[in-house]
Amino acid sequence: MDFIARLLKFPLICLAALSFFFLIANGSGLAETSPEFEKKQKFKKAIKSLMDRRLSVSQKLFEELVQSYPRDALVHYNLGNVYYLQEKYSKAIKSFKKVVELDSPLKYPSRLFLSKTYRQLKRLKIAFNYIQKLKQERLPKNLAASVRAERAELQKTIMRVGVDLYKKQKYKKALQAFNLALELEFDDHALMFKAMTLKKMKREKEAEQYFTQVYRTTSDPALRRNAQILLEKPVFKPSRKKWWLIAEAAGGYNSNVFADGAEEKPFSGATLRFFGILGKRFFSDPSMTWDLNYSLSWEEILDLEDGRLVQHSITGPLSFFPGKGVFRITPSVSYQQIFTKNFRVVPGVQLSYESDRKPKGPGLSYFFGRNIPIDSEFSYLKGNIHQAQAFWKWPWGVRGNHRLFYTVVRFESNPLPISGGTLPLQYNAHGPGYRFLSFAQSDWRHEGAISYLFKDYEGVTTPLGNKRNDQQLAAFLRSSTPINRELDFFVNSSLIWNRSTIDVGEVDNRDFTQFVIYAGIAWKF
Image (cartoon, rainbow, N blue to C red; front, side, top):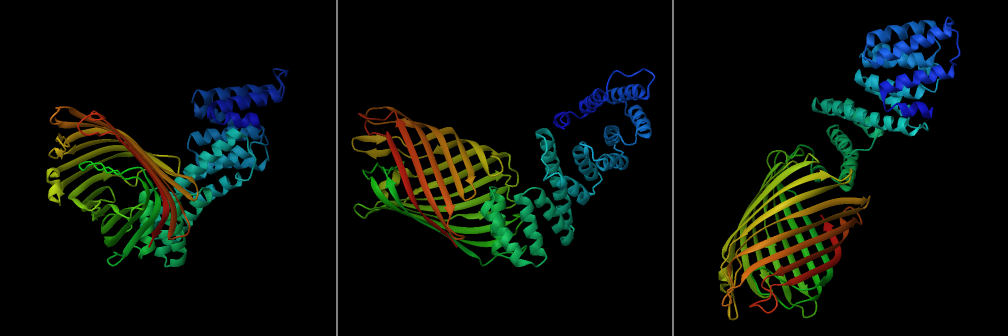
């Protein structure tokens, strides 16, 4: 049986080799006029015709052998394969069923081919029954691999039929199809369609259970977002009153605070961090053809040593997603305060293109903003911000994804006044990066990124006239795990490493390293 299974990887060679095996097993010292010798010669001709793709000749010879040897499972099996290759599926079924009836070791690959044949005939329930019969069998490695491949192909076919039935509003039959697909192999999309079908059938509690399961386990951001929307409101009904809140509180360590456009501050040590997003969804639908919502996010960083406010920022984006989650428009306004000084307001808009529904593919984003200083002390900072990013994403197994990106930045500003001169702040920057999302274990979610930017500053320092170029490496990692449906525990860490031609001994040292780590609780309401 192991010999047979190894040959299944090569269908045509399989038939020839099986036949050779058959001949050896029956002996080679036969008289040239004996029936067994005639059988051997006819078998060889049938196999050679099959190898030469002369299927009609091979079919005729195997049919003659079946007439002469009706209880020979190998003859029936080969004839079934010839019929299958000719797409004579009804005859192939009869041949493979005969092999199973004869209880030959070839009954296992015959059941596999019965599943494949019924799948071709769109008789999916019968195909499902045959492939399920092989689930509990201890099969040789190569045969088991072929069975797994057929299960995956059958699941795809059943899912296509289920989606078509769902679109035709035949929900009872669609639910049966999605249940079959899930029995073959767990799949987030099959579970999502099952939940949506139950919702349509007014089975609200069951639907909520499966939406929650998708939300907690999927690594697909679009699927997770859709599950969240459907958990909150009835399917296909716009949400105009739903408010939502995410709040985080954490404690940790900050090595120092540095902001481009402001002087470095000698702060380091223990910190408290508070972060939140308050949002309202004005309109959405589960297919994400349209989605319009507003959110207000805020962040507070406190120095525990002397109780002072280190950084305070508020951002208010209005997100508008037309085109099934592919094209997005996000206007925003942000306000930032560093220590006791009002730093800046940045109105802006981001345009992005990404196919959320495809696990693999390209994407583009562009952000335009305007730095507007609040305090007259920062009047030099006035200018535009341009940032463009191109990326390519691809899946990481079934529970994660990778993303490679390249970023180009244009930051406009007048020089920074410092003691004894000025320091250029306006720059062009570019560099690559990598981002990932992974569910290493069922309850842990890990995401992180690393990026490099080369900043070419325009102008020189005064009075020394030095040219400024910075190289910056940035990385972050966040790990989180749910405590319950509303609470998550998380750990965040980040590192910024900046090396500049304006370093020790220059008019102002721009070399710095910032390391931040903190842990806390996130509340989702």
